[in-house]
Image (cartoon, rainbow, N blue to C red; front, side):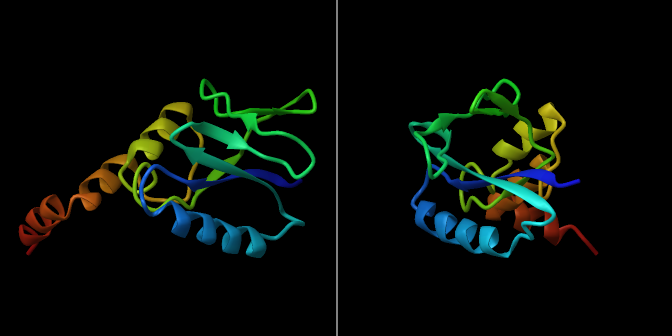
Length: 128
């Protein structure tokens, strides 16, 4: 049985363009026999899925789902392809942790610490 994957792209920083390119490459290489992939765009204006044959469909952030042609789509996992915030700073990871949805990056705490280079250096310097 195929897994249903949300491929997150976009973001809220200047790295938005890089995220979109990364997601396109990832989508191209995910095995369509194993995964149903829904590319979800995150912007300042909202979170959307935009199928080729219809208008933007807003993501229900209460449970991270979308409704396509009357059918509620829930995700088995999330591939985070967002560079910068909120993809690398722990915000999305914390959200998905609360919902119990697995994702491809490190956890929220590790993401938050490693996003701040000063904190990362301070922690690494204490390791013998």
